[in-house]
Structures are given as C-alpha cells and as structure tokens.
Length: 344
Ligand code: P6P
Image 1: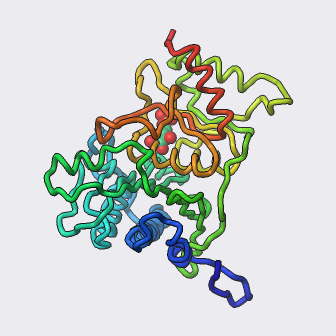
Image 2: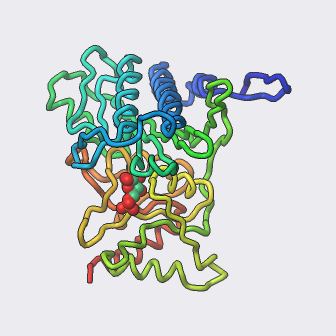
Image 3: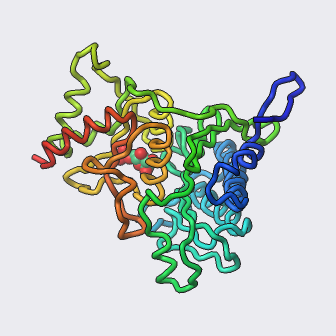
C-alpha cells in the first residue's frame, strides 16, 4: 500500500488513497462505491468539527422538535442528519436514503445512483451534553431495480443485512475514527485534524477470540429474560480457564461500546426486556451495519436466537435485540437465551 510521506519520513495512507487502491477488491469495482465512501468521509469531518465545538457554541440543547420515535432531537442530531443528506445527495451515487431522524425513506430525485444508504446520523446523542463519545453509523445496499415508484423504492430499502455491500461507523471520541468494510475485512482510519484527513491507523481489524468485558445496561436486570439473567451469572462466575469473571463496561453509546468490543473482544448486549420485547436498537441502521463489521472482523451478531443479518426486515425503523462480539461469547449467550426465553 503506497502512501504519502510526512516531513518526518513516515508513510501514511489517507482514506481516499486506501479506497482507490482497494477498489479492485470490490465486486462492483466501478468507482461509485469509492465516491460514496468519500462522501461519507467528508460529511463525518464536517460533523466532527461541530461535535468538537458543540460545547462552545449554542448548538447544544433541544430544537424543540421530536423525531419519529417521539425522542427530543438535539440540534447536533439535526445537523448531522442534514450534512449526510447533503453529502450523499450531492455525490450522485445514491438514489435512496434513510435516516433514524426521518420517518420514511428519502428518494434522491436528482440522482440515478446505484446505491441505497441508511444511517443513524448521531448515535448516542443523549450523551452530547455530557461530552461522552457519540457516533455515526451507515449501511449501504446496491439497488436491484431502477423503478422510481415509491413502493418499489421501499422494497429496495427493506433488505436483510446479508445483502449489504458496505457498512461502517464514525466514533467521535478522544480521537475521531472511521471504521468500515466492503466485505473484504475491516479497516480503521483516525482523523488527523491538523490536515483534515482520515489516516489508516488500524489495518485489517480482527476481534479477539475472547475478551474480558461484557457490556449491557444492568439497570434493566429485573426486566430481562431468564436466560439473559443466567448468562450474566455465568459471566460473573470465577473460572480462570474461561477468563471469567468478565468486567462490566457500558458507555451508553452503541458505536463506542461496539468499537471497544471490536478492539478488546467480549460481548455487547441490548436484549429484549419485558417492557420492550424487541429491545431498543434499530435493525436497519444500527444492528445490521454493526453486525456486518463484526462478522467481517471474525465475530458474530445475533438477536439471541439467530443471525442478525438473516432477519428479513418488515419496517424501516424496526427494533431487534442485539448480542454482538467475540464468536464464542455470542454462541454462549444464544445457548442461555434458547434455554430461557421467558420473562419471569
Ligand atoms: P439505554 C443511545 O441512545 C442508544 O440508541 C444506543 O447508542 C445505546 O447503545 C442505547 O441507546 C443505550 O440505551 O437504554 O441503555 O440508555
């Protein structure tokens, strides 16, 4: 992989260089997906700029609007949503968009692009005001028809995750990283703010076979299925041979919790509860893209009973339970859930 030489003589590879040089790996290597990924990279740099100065200008606080789920939309959410719409519409590679912040699909009328992009523009926005890591998640499908009929357009969006052609996230934390896959492994790029470029910092990311962290909101323990309670007890038992007990880490931003799981191994869980039998996380623009990334890095993603990416979607904003991380841990979680699916 050729790169740019810095003044200190170091070879660095920018996101753009990497995308172009890896283009041949991609089945539909025609350049459009490369342009699309660059469009996402541009939008995320603009969002990053606003996230970093959010505490300094009056962009915090509530817009007074609610999103389709009745949740207050903070200004940064709305800004990130609009930036992604602008970048992806202008880029011309996408003809259909969908966002957590918009109730229906968004046909890009001007473009005849071959791609569909679904995104959560600012995941974890409830953490914005306390300066905790937040993120952007995106999922890319290739169009299979050229119809402009809204019914057909909806069909183009509601595809199982196993038909994704690309997926990724941006994590706005102590540094800003973009992590993505096009089906040939996972690569991570760290933003160098001094030059405004994402530089290859984590080539060929692989999730550890086993980690030492589990991640879930224990506050809902009393609402969990019996099998989930038994799995947590299993993780907390002392057993050096299987690296137990695990430690609990929970940030409350999916992107941050899954990013840590990708780097350190272990398991993240947002399970069903008695009050929310489908869990909280969205299949199309949270669970599917994260599942694609983690599977490409050697891990697994399940709804507790089966593979996330095999779920046939019925609604754009549908929720599913999520168990994602090191393959062994996800398999063990499934074995407990299957023995104890009931809430008692
Ligand atoms: P809870 C953030 O609001 C989010 O959508 C995900 O990023 C995160 O994993 C989850 O909700 C946290 O939910 O119920 O634990 O606050």
